[in-house]
Length: 460
Image (cartoon, rainbow, N blue to C red; front, side, top):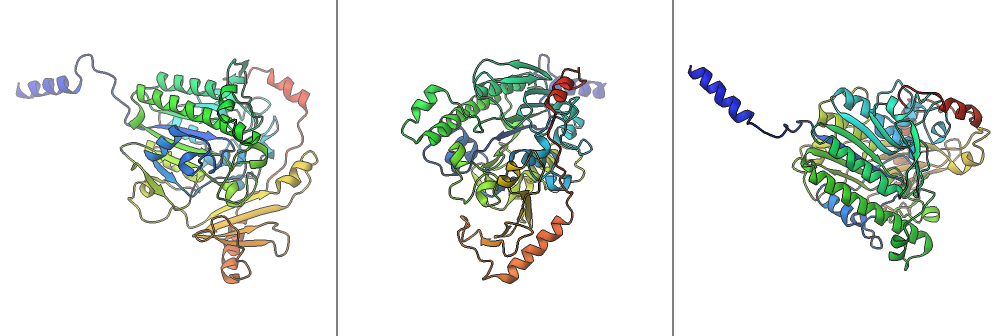
């Protein structure tokens, strides 16, 4: 009798009548990626001409990784982000394999949304994909682990009255693109507040073709025209991230959500008005301005607020970190779980070295239709030292920098430090030997792709 009474009491206290649904034990994952925004564009990174109070607050309440690295252009960064692998290991050095209608990210490579879905997560991509489509949508987001997709497939998204695909059905969406993507993301949060979810929110801002709201432009009339446009777009983005944060709070999800915020590559000052100050270079470069970006990790109650983390980290690490938090199976990766480094549990560094390889963008852009060769560029960072090889086949085209003393990469020390240069060169050669050659797909035949898109795919 006593045993029965104890069981009844326990049932009463553990499941009271009318109780709210039990919160999921697994954290939600929110992955926010912006496009072509540099460290010179956001307040928490040091920018003073564009107010970003909502992003600054996210940074104050999370961990700012001051040496957060990506690839120098859009698609390879996104491939690295969603696979935890160097894209060069998979045969992707630049955007070209993803810029045609019939190719995409290799389907045998597991993706983060696929792994999280296996772990019981609802998954959605809102915004930019740029990892392929396929003639039968075989590379599209819903065939790569996302339950829901609202956004666009390629490199370019519109700002005003954009055409977005909702699970394969394209439609013109009246309004401003950044606002529309945020509204969709907020709706996902509300719909999934009682289940673990992975929401990948990939904004167009501040990529081409730039358009801003007149009221936002008016606020920055004192800036030069290119910077004015960038400021208007980024300010609007910050306001939208404030709305997203409020939606998380209203749904009671803030402390149950692991958030990453980063840019896919550095800014393009002359084209977009975005900046990488104080770093040298820009998008497409292997100098710091092309590959070192704003990078924040936020998880209240689990990661310390207001911490700055200086050791190099990379988008390689997003997948292993998310799966460690979610209890999912990882598999092969080039990244590491960042949680013990960011919370102070580990005093080691996540990476002994980081590597890059790409092709000279100016060369391959001119010859992309012919698929002609372009010079390969590569780089390695090991500790505070970084070697940049400006042409792998060219003689004496190596530059060596000490980033601790020279973060702007102004002084080439290759001649003064030949032994160190050779150590880094040997590490880079060993890594390059493990890579898969990139195959440039032929230029797509537009009429064939358009005809195929009219077929009814299973999971567009």
